Amino acid sequence: MRVLFISFNSSRLIVPPFPLGLASVVASLGPEHPFRVIDFMFEPDPRQKVLAVFQDWQPGLIALSLRNIDNQNSCFPEFFFPEAQEFCLWLRTHTQAPLVLGGSAFSIFPQ
Image (spheres, rainbow, N blue to C red):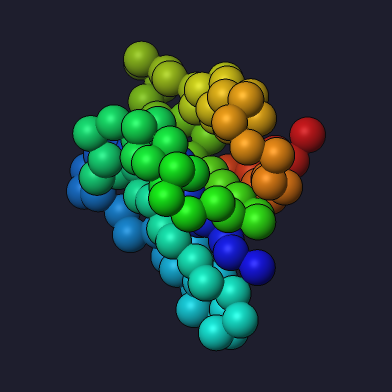
């Protein structure tokens, strides 16, 4: 099955973090599961990149990694779940591939 992995994090507060959890899952895949990875950290237009992948290569599964709940700034808080939810709804308008959510933010607050 073709798997599209998406690292949703684009926050660069200190240094751009490596999506370690996502990379660990990718490394565990066998050759029977071709994959692609889109890291939103380095995409100027992430949705356009996703659409390009959909045109070129239809995934059978989309794995979305949510790294952060918020920007960790108590003076100017920014919460990422509404944006992630809206992105999931956007994905539904472009593909029927199952969507699997994971990552540290999702694991902390799965509801």
